Length: 280
Ligand SMILES: Nc1ncnc2c1ncn2[C@@H]1O[C@H](COP(=O)(O)OP(=O)(O)O)[C@@H](O)[C@H]1O
Ligand SMILES: [Mg+2]
Image: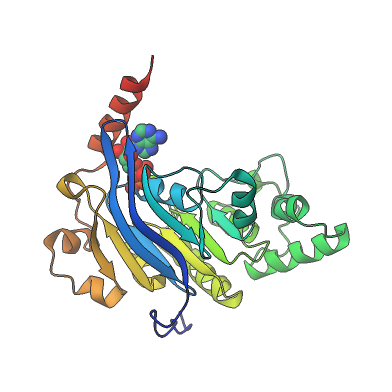
């Protein structure tokens, strides 16, 4: 809030180019021919009902998995055919804020934020400490660095995780449901921080969320993935204004928070089926 959104999307350079991407798990086609481009400076939102393939798509974008078909270019380089050392080079420019990437419980907040700096830079200890102090200050956690994750609130943990994700000043921030489990006020705080900090370091963000308040607060470009008959397809795409004005009843239902067809239960069953059918 108070931060003007980037003006035009078309004039800015493409950072991620997804072309004809298909992801299959056994008999199930989860992503079914996706095409989209993320431009520099965007806060690009991926939304859609549970099981529509948001996390699967994010895994492809970070190179944690190869798609069944299609092309993904990041910073102009094809990542789907890349070896692990090239991928590692690309991923050094990534910040990642995932539910699974939680803080290490045995380390203090400071030590958690220092991790990527120690692992990926040759910075001397005193410089690492200075950067950690700066990052903690940016997320409003000055004075809490010596605490363990168990000693701070859920919202503070998310902010600490954000400080860690931004420790290396990434060009691209990926987050998967960064505000899951937070109340609306903490959600707004984490959203604001994500937006301010990415703008400050000139980063591009790709955010998976089903929180509509977040979508319209921070999104500059949005895609919505379908479920049911439209599983794995983009059912709506555009700016927040364009999404709000989208006449598709499924889109309207979703942004008004009504339950979309093909929700959790169905997705869970399919997942179990796929797991069972692939076990020996
Ligand atoms: N490793 C996997 N093996 C088999 N099926 C999977 C795997 N990962 C995800 N799926 C299936 O792909 C679909 C999309 O999952 P996911 O990407 O996690 O959806 P979302 O994040 O939108 O809720 C689900 O039906 C899920 O069961
Ligand atoms: Mg998910």
